[in-house]
Length: 414
Image (cartoon, rainbow, N blue to C red; front, side, top):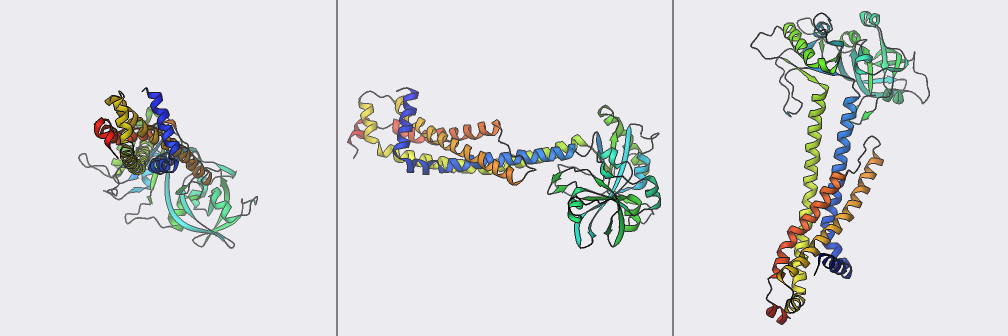
């Protein structure tokens, strides 16, 4: 019997016992659908993270306080007093760090912003005038604050689109209007362009104020030594080729600023945009694989179901097997027939699961416009190949058992 004839007989057997075949396939269907859906969602999340990091700016370096490792789940070791405004000013000196285009300190705190009877929970970010250039984030309406605003600690604000939508009616002009932050009045001078972002990191849900105003009027930031603390410093390198040189220059300046001796470790961390992106990409990839493994357990359960029903089939068809052997069927012919039946059952279940998984991914994409849970060919090949492999593996024992039947005993079986 050739392979095509074995496949035809397997399909005839499936259609002859539709309910039993469907129940046998159910584990495979659920497993493949879950694998396709979860891997697609994982890839979608990974794409969102990549887009958000690329939207932060070009050739960015991030300076964090303490010893930070983005791939290490343990808390960062502080190892020092943190970063200060003086550190940012030292890094901005072109004679000390010539490979930087701009330096932006950021002092961020959560707060409630209100206007009239409307409120919005947002992040207040104190920063400087180079923020639009370094972060590639410009006002769509109005202006950004000036050096004079920073020097005088002006109560002016540039708001993000999410904050605007929470506090204003659609189409209402916000420039010149007042909002309250920590019961302090601020005048809106700019509305940022829409940047986008996910629910856990909405870049539009922000209010930018002069860093001096944030540190001295809103959220006191002065340390015991008189320095003003900042949370993170962003630095833009003149070109990607000069990134390593810039990191060396910045590390030397910060070590000098923090009075770190030759043998002592840094109490700060400098990370490039690609390093952070690679770290988060690694994390999301691991989560995607983890979700796929969990969903793959259903495939194993489905494989056990296939083996169970194939053993039942062998018992039911004992006389048939004996008759086929009596008329000349060889060990290989019986083995092939039952193996093909198991693989066909698993493959058909895998195809149904593929369709359901694609539908599930499409539904998730429609429910979350920011998440594009697209099905890629790698996950399709993995799911179908694995389901066929499950059928082959779990069908091997029943097929071997059928092929080893003694034809005389099989013909006598009642």
